[in-house]
Image (spheres, rainbow, N blue to C red):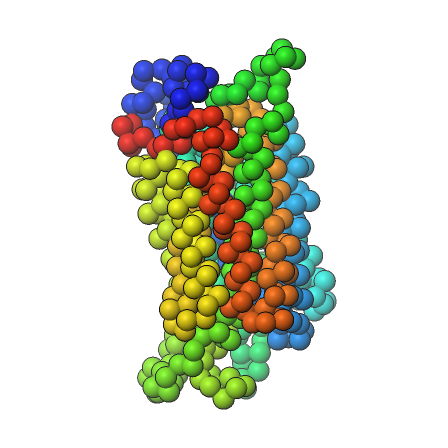
Length: 469
């Protein structure tokens, strides 16, 4: 991140050579690109896990006969794990350092993944929810540590670019997760009967094996313990200089903005399949013609709904979710480039404002135009989480680890608001339910536009292109 106009901002004391440092070269001259590449695997991992969660709701709705509000317990269990472990993760990260915290998170994720093997035999909703919660608890360690760690692996003016670049691989995981979830959760045998409940454990056991391997790799990998610049002098030893992170509005409003952003994201992601199978206009009969949707990858995509109209099946919707995540991934990569040219808070503000407009179109039920807008919301959501994160922990020094845990704890919004969105959808329809994420995006836009006033750093996150990237 570049520097602000405040005299205490890094620009006033930045070494003249800092601007010429590469994006992955730290203050002592070491290149930490290998460490950054290792972190990329973590971002892809929790993206993959989140992507599978988002196609699980519809499976439980049909198998356990749940309505939208009830199936949102999956999201509640997922984000409850984040809420419960965010503070312990931040505390352990401070005590054990980045490496120790990451290894603990990986081992906890492995426990959750392997738990799905007995959970499949128990075959009760609570057993699956427990596995979801344990995995989320492990991912909390990874997100609490990896997000702020990417911001210090090089010159501060590239912090927002690095975290968005790392989050781009998170988008790859999100892209693959629904495909894996659709393949196992909505699988059928030769007789056409669902085998999803019996095969649900397979992708999670695979995750368990992968994270055990990653834990071993991280144990032997070099991971320098680097602290963020202390722009607000939170680390000063004198009692008069000590301040609470809560005294900085750019931080505590980031917590609220993250709560509402994740709430909106979770609602849109978790009810995507329901939207595609209930709100999309009837598809033409030609789409069900032999050679179009009955063979190969597209087999089983089109089905006759209870209303008698042709529409997308659950399998089709879960694969279309991957198309949504492709839009998300494109948004992440293009967003990283945009953040090198424009101030991050302005990008956040305008992207959020665009999401508000898109939700209004979806709410208005304008046929295929509204369907296209659902996919576009994925694009504009793409940069919000990492950008809010970078804006929230800006200039907090060693307190960034503690601040990070609170911002991760704000992910609890994903547990609460989908139930509200589901309740609105149950009472009216899912298109009307988009009024909930619309209101959330409106606050995020407000936060982005007033961030300079909150942080007293007018140009603090304008990403420079003058460095050696």
